[in-house]
Amino acid sequence: MQTAMKLCSKIAWFRIACTLLLFAALSPTSLRAQEDGPAYGAELEGFDYPWPEQRFKFGSQGQEVQMAYLDRAPNSNANGRTVVLLHGKNFCAATWESTIAALTAAGYRVVAPDQIGFCKSTKPRQYQFTFQQLARNTHALLQSLGVQRATLMGHSTGGMLAVRYALMYPQETEQVVLVNPIGLEDWKAKGVPSLSVDQWYERDLKTTAERIRNYERATYYAGQWRPEYERWVQMLAGMYRGPGKEIVAWNSALIYDMIYTQPVIYEFGLLQMPVLLLLGQQDTTAIGKDIAPPEVKAKIGNYPELGKLTAKAMRNAKLVEFPELGHAPQIQDADAFHRALLGGLSPGRVD
Image (cartoon, rainbow, N blue to C red; front, side):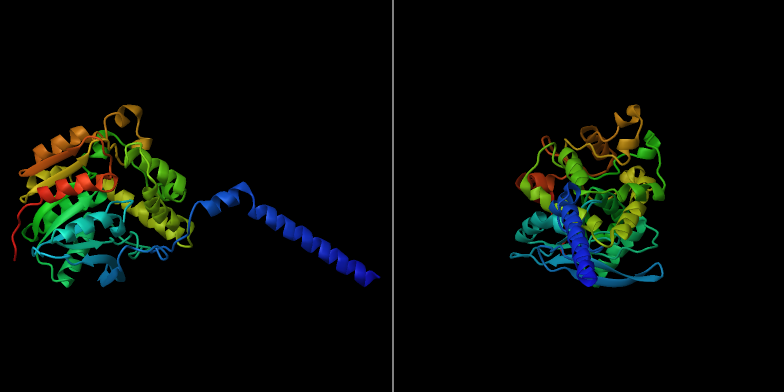
């Protein structure tokens, strides 16, 4: 009898435990987590790019690292030219998908790397992130691919990198194309308070799909939203759900510090090559805008003004404005953007 009672007691506790686990699994918090999307690895393992990515392995700052990249040949009528696409802070090589298709259809070879610290590339525990270092990494990649001269096209943070690359390698840069670049102003000089790397890290650890989506809707797409944008939200959010969340956030924090402390605005006048500025006028991007005092917040991220000032500061710049578009015009209105891009690319020199 006692044995039977003990067995029944164990069964009862087992049923209670199962019931509690079931309720936990069905709780609103758990359901939201399940509905929010997939989890990816720290190097975006599990997220497929539109084409197979390749790897460039090299030594940097005393460690072995690798850059993931896409290298697409022209579809036909090759013009002998190469365009290098430099992604932004919250973007990857894959987000250039429609631009790669448009350029290769027009006869260009396209190389689109994921920078160290981003997306499918290595995320080091220790790394001194500078735009000079990222430019050197990119240059080493292009040398390994036999690319001696190229057009550098940078979006958002990639715009700051494109400027730095062109200043470091002017003889190898045919043209610079800047797509809603950040760094058209010096936020620190305008009064945006600084954050430590540790503070950036704590902020990044709180990254969720909802936060990404709300920010992108307001800034990237001028208050609009379409289902196809969700893919890029989940691309980013998935890394913050995965087992490498901490190293992803840490690299992001180091990169934010780089962006804030290394302005390029003061060197725009040194660019010798043609520059094409493609700017969505509804963009309001500014690093640290959410922590800036009201009087500072009101005067930063004004792209209609910044675009004109930037074009004036450069020796040979052409400005194309998209009045209704936001920070990511190449995604929001790909057709209009690519017409302007292809029409604005300089004839170049075929080596």
